[in-house]
Amino acid sequence: MSRPTLFALQVLVAVICIVLWQVLSTVPVFGKILLPPFFFSNPFDVFSQIVKWFASGVIWKHLGITLAESILAFVIGSAGGVLIGFWFARQPLVAAVFDPYVKMVNALPRVVLAPIFALWLGLGIWSKVALGVTLVFFIVFFNVYQGVKEVSRTVLDNGRMLGMSERQLMQHVYWPSALSWMFSSLHTSVGFAVVGAVVGEYLGSAAGLGYLIQQAEGVFDVAGVFAGMFVLSAFVILIDYGVTLVERRLLVWRPTASDGRG
Amino acid sequence: MTTPTAVALEDAKVAFRLGDGRVYTAVEKAHLAVAQGEFVAIVGPTGCGKSTLLNVAAGLLKPAAGSVRIFDQPLAGLNRDAGYLFQADALFPWKTALDNVAIGLEIKGTPRTDALPQARKWLTSVGLGAFANRYPHMLSGGQRKRVALAQVLIRDPKILLMDEPFGPLDAQTRQVMGNLLLDLWNADRKAVLFVTHDLEEAIALADRVVIMSAGPSSRIIGDWRVSLPRPRDIFEVRLDKEFHALHREIWSVLKDEVMKGYAQSTHAAEAV
Figure 1: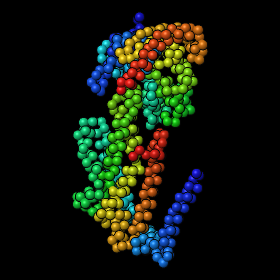
Figure 2 (figure 1 turned 120 degrees about the vertical axis):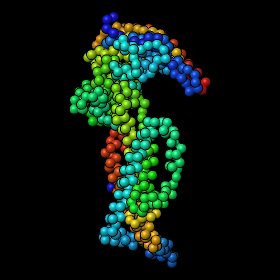
Figure 3 (figure 1 turned 90 degrees about the vertical axis):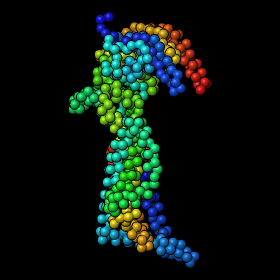
Figure 4 (figure 1 turned 90 degrees about the horizontal axis):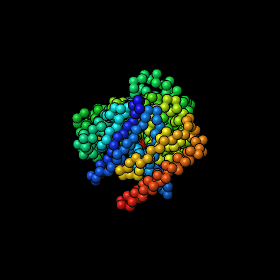
């Protein structure tokens, strides 16, 4: 299918959904409105709410905060994941000792940590960053661990026979392999960084997209909730597009750069 | 002989400990000497431990008994005089063809600015001058082997160890690669130890063909000198009368081992 046709069909889906939503929430069917405005609002109100946010400029502050939290969570979580993943993969004993604890913490639903982080780090951005870090860390950690473990035996032997020292093996074999695994999970880890930030904001904060949605919900402003959700979706799609660009640049050497392994 | 022997295995025995604690002897009492400038091919049935023997010469495996001498020095650790061409893909997938070749020099501490022009020269001599910026996955199997050959040769090793390097390639590409190898080898005649299961390939390439018996505990059971004139063309040499006579002679010995090898591998499969 050609790109323009595909794009047209994608737009068509959105148009049909919005039209249905608008019609069902304003025009009675058999004397009854199927989507009561109180629960479902309508596309027009949602759209005007979004326009109002952007026109007045209040949205930028919230977007900026959520973006900052996501980036910090991603950077800190990735750095930790890469370091610890590398360390564990190269020291099987350490990995074996910590294995049950890693599994335990990873199995924990991160939402329950939010109140603790709020208590420890306050209601500012750092409690949200911490929540994002706990999500990003494990994805990157597992991928880097796997990446170092699964370096091809032949490639490793080849490096040795070419005369590489341990340090050079690290630089030319283990490191690129680990990074390639990390990059292949980039979409997932960046997505989780945003999730951590927004969930954290939702559970207690004074700014950010999560806060915006939570505030609207508190006063039964359904249009506001939907508007927040749409802005959030657009925000995530933009970030994801950015990740795709970065990935295309970094993983040129991979046969299928588009299918992630994360 | 006045010049030292490039590779000398004496009474080499290689054994592996299996998962259930038993010891599997792969190769026993292996005597093998490769002189400087000599091209030796090892042929044997599948699973006879040809590659094992090669890994011993490379220092990737330690023999359980016997000695390995490289230029009259006992081998400790990896064989630093040898270049190793692997059967499987061994290129660094995250490096371009050019970088894959240049790395051989960069490891030794050659500055990148000096390594790159040399790598380009080597890529050209294996016929891939135009593919310098391709990544391995963008190259065909034969092209990847060419890059691997350049990667090994740029370091100018005194010994070349080759583990069925052209095994995964199709028949025509194998012959082309064989001729390329002979051309490059002719330039400075390194000592070569070449493992293959293809007797024709062995005779066409080598100065000596060594036959191994079927495993386990396989031994070297034959050693033939190939006196076909050099330089050879692999396509032509196969039509030579002497080639056919030698092939018949060696095959009469090898055939029994191949049959034994198959019988054993099917029995082993039934036992499992």
